[in-house]
Image 1 (cartoon, rainbow, N blue to C red):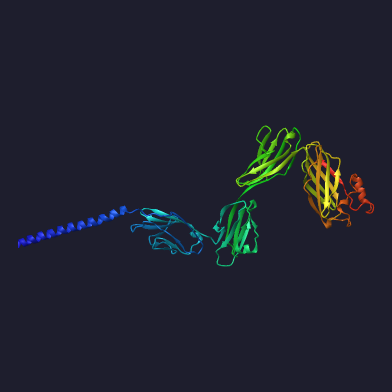
Image 2 (cartoon, helix red, strand yellow):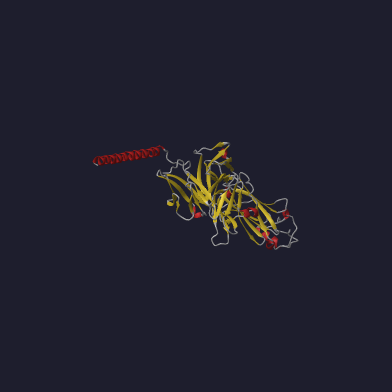
Length: 479
């Protein structure tokens, strides 16, 4: 019995020990292999780390999480900005659905869904970002790109198309405005919500607004700000500058440019350099940039034509300024109409005394100008070379009239002023209708003193030629 007992005891102990060794060997073997494989596998990664998706309201949008080397040991987390929206295959929110490939489906997208989304692969914390933009109820497209509430920079001469699209259930009318004013287009363009910008220039720069009028109190709307880069626009009000020997002359040009331009003056084909003779002054004037050339101790060699040239990255432009001793071109100042009497005023710059002034006037339809000449002129002692010419006419003919003036000083004549057009209405004419041609009207008063001219107007019409002229052409200096 004992041996059996001993044999039984030995058997039980051998079996127990064998079992322990076997189990331990299997556990050790099975545990080591996977650990070695995990270390050898490369980590997950994304071929693109940043994606962008454009969607319309109501769309179902798939946000991908396409990771390479994704393993069973990896887990996926989805975030909207910093808020978790999915954990593995478990979505948070009724409009988010998890897909088998770790992507998510966002149903019935709205403008509020526009944000930065990203999926994160754990435990490596590798991320792929997706920027989702869901168009609002209204979008503005430029050449089929969404530019709603953004800025666009165009170049002079470009061609672009602005299109306003609405995503509304009912009927609506698209209305465009530009810088606060209603923008008119062709009926077909309005119907399609399109604004065509052809041969773009400076005047096309500004704010374009689109409104989808659906009859509600809060209709959808959007805007786009357009900036235009253009070559310089150069101008001057004084194309002729009067000066005097030994004096200082100033000539200027105004310009606008985008991007900003560089200005300089040219004479006889050479760019003028800063010196004791020449200096430049830059300033702002009525929304323009102004460059002024100052010429000291003027002599005959300084007379002639100057070019003010301005250039930028888009192009260049120039304006001509002529320096001489002759009077500058007269500028119309204002006029006053009292019944049949018209009083007009011009300003003339001249450092030298004026010796004569001529007024031309013409009725529309006439082939020739009528002329009034003044041989004596006066200037106030305290003026700085600014003369004021005042002329009064009695015009019995209705219609559109034109008048121009030129002046003469000790060196010569100025150019004629630009024509000034003015209308004599029927209600302003009290004299009987006359058939004299314009070149014969109002010549009776020329060269007659003011009192005599007044007396002539009181004579019968048979004695005085129809349409007597009140020829009081006064040349006086502006006080």
